[in-house]
Length: 369
Image (cartoon, rainbow, N blue to C red; front, side):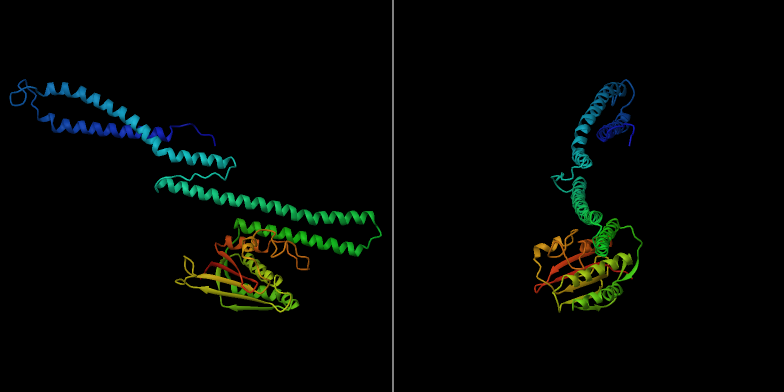
């Protein structure tokens, strides 16, 4: 934005200091005149018949007062300039850091030293903003790279199948169409997941009152055939847990958690437990604003190394292996979407590996009346 250049903050502070000092000096001289010189008689004999009189005092006082005022003004300008520079030095550091960030350097930190004051609080807040912004940008870059890689694979497979069909007209058309449909379906699911993830990250959705217990029952009913096919017991327990948010996004969150719990389970005879509850104010698990709605999804499964847990919510990470080859292979965005939805609803997501194998996922969202 083009703006007319004005006085710098340092010059404004300098003029303010000098002006304040000059006004204070003028008031002091006025007090001296008002309470001292007015008692000196204005006659040739002076006070008690002894000179000097008021005329001589005024002629002697005012030149000295003018010199003192000039000295005060110069002292105010010089001292104010130095003092303003010292006071505004932290803003210079913050300005330089902001310019570096504007040029794309997000790794720079101010780390201002000294005792806590307004400038240090501003510096710490700016460093925290840069830290979060750098993490967000790095995550977006990794996500874009992974997404481009994942989308390139089905497109390349489709092109290869079409090339084979063109070069070999005798090839079984039904088999070719089936493979193309599978690849196309996977690309569609990936695109929908990417759009849903972006929607959760931006937080652009209407809010309404939602009961997590009803969403858990709906997700369990939808995934019950898959659980029965794998001989996994799927239970939904607990009571009402109301929160405020998007019913569509929250349903996708619950469905992803339950589906992951079913798919990443033991080969047969496993269990998945979905529990919902409301933790009221005063409890150690309640949020700062009052009640907290809690959703827990626990499953059996192979042991999960603790160091791998933080990577599960990264895009395109699929449980304990990079790629699944069965009919329920995902696109690696299940828990990434869950984390995005939880973040958009101002909640928290905790993943804890069970000692006997499997995972315990806890979602905490602000409660609603």
